[in-house]
Image (tube, rainbow, N blue to C red; front, side):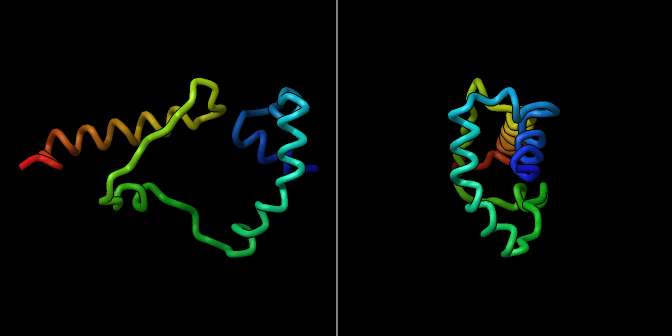
Length: 93
């Protein structure tokens, strides 16, 4: 229970778990075992340098109801790509 609460507060901010609809909380409970894979793999965090090294077409997806800092990170990455595109003429002939 503590891990789900912690996860929800990282995503949605302090007090996010009780604010989630009961159906969402149940879905998270039902799928919580899926978090064990990445934890057990002990992957290094995906860094800004990792994101900046991507050289493939990338689709940015965001929702109007995305919680926490998702939209901030998405906007920042999108702006960085646009700036790089305009400076380097990426994708032009």
